[in-house]
Every structure is written in structure tokens, then in C-alpha cells.
Amino acid sequence: MARVGRLAGALLAETRGEFYLVGNTKVPCDFVAAGFERPIEVDGRRPFVRLSRCRPADIDQPQIALDIEGDALPRLLANAFLIERTGSVSERLWRLVLGGSEDESGPSAGVVDARWLGDIPQPIWRIVRDTVLRCT
Image 1 (tube, rainbow, N blue to C red):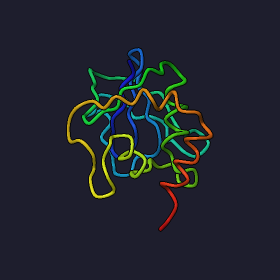
Image 2 (tube, rainbow, N blue to C red):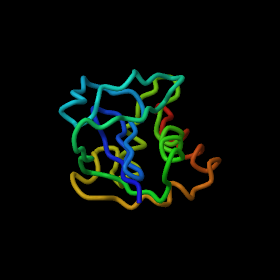
Image 3 (spheres, helix red, strand yellow):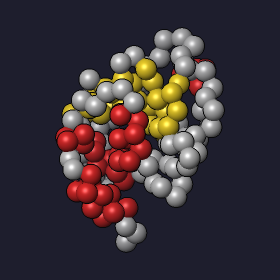
């Protein structure tokens, strides 16, 4: 089962022992302290990059767990969570999947079962995305 958490505002995904950074970081990140070599920059043309470990690394909680594995995982995460014009992770969508409300950040610890995210038809998720991201 794949695991996804956050790293400096981006998503950090682990699948089959490989790690991916999905989206742009929102704050400076010490990749070496997190256990990774510094990656090439992520931008709108490349919404995710594979990270190379320089020492043991783990994903902070809260996390979501998905059944999607391999290269399909970062593609799904980019389509599900990234704001297209900025390449950043939507905090609103992340909180929604964690089960938190607009006023909450979601669970502070633990793993949330989000296998449904891989099963939901993309046209339905697009409606959810558009509704959540709509400015009020």
C-alpha cells in the first residue's frame, strides 16, 4: 500500500520503496535532513519528480494510504491535488481527503484510508475539485 504525506508543503509519496515529490514546495526544504538528495526543480511541466534517498527516510503524519502503486501514484496525486496554474498542493483538497473541515487541518497523526481516491471516476473528482477550489 502506498503512503502519502507532506514535505515543505508538497506531497511526499512512497510506493514500492520509491519516493516522489509531487507539487511545488511552499517553504524552504532541507532535503538532506529529510533523507533525500536535492531534486531538480518541480514546475508546471513536471508536476512530480522521483527523489533519491541519501539515508533512511520516512513520511510524517498525517498520511493517506492508497492502493495505487508505481508511476501511476504521482500522476494520480498531481491530478487530484495540484492547482494547475501554480503547481502547488491545494490545502482545501488535502483537508477534504484527510476528513477535516475548512477550519481544521485534519488529523494531526495517523493514517487515513484514501483508497477511494484511486477508485473515484475522474469526471466526478473534477466536479469535486472545481467545487472545493471555487472562490467564495
